[in-house]
Image (cartoon, rainbow, N blue to C red):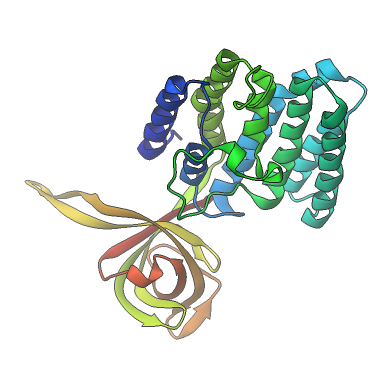
Length: 311
């Protein structure tokens, strides 16, 4: 499974941006756009799984810089093991949050008295990878400022990749003693290898629903139509809405063309069909879905809702 064109285009834009930047920094705003392009559903689905995979890969990439500093202190290793346990459901997020706080406080204490900025930043990267597993990354759907920088957010809101870049460069971009060329090497690796690998590492299965009619109701809409692809379950989230137009060929009709594509975040609240309520329904069935979320109010007859779920 390759990356979608929208992600490829965004990664190319990001590479050009970081190369042109005087200190070779990748803005937080552009990273948020990349996180969002991995899947808009926060805390669930393939998007969350890809962001977790990316954060873990990033932290492990700079872990040797911590090991050069201290082979005895295993805090980052414990944190990354715990992050993996959260990812597969073996560790409760409440317990993980308490572990994150202890590890964060430990890193803050070390960094306040430690001159090895590379090692400390690598430790923080591991700690923030755990936070991604607990809470996902932050990418407001209204955020459109590609120039937003890391020093414009609180330290606890800085992500694993920011700290990993600081570890690689010997300091954050606002530190004049840090090395811009090493920062560039890190971001080129992150954009050309880490992000595509994280996208491809998470299998997903598509779902599609063709909307035949829409009836608004308080807090959402009731949309009648047909399930085109996949098994739709209560709690699933559609991430795109678009039109499909059949293409006439000499032999009949060929594959439909997709147009009017727009991002949405529409959750399936209820499924009704044939006078009954269902928890899930498979492709080929007609149904009425109760939908809520960003984009639900603008649905119209002829729209197709699409999304990808972890397979």
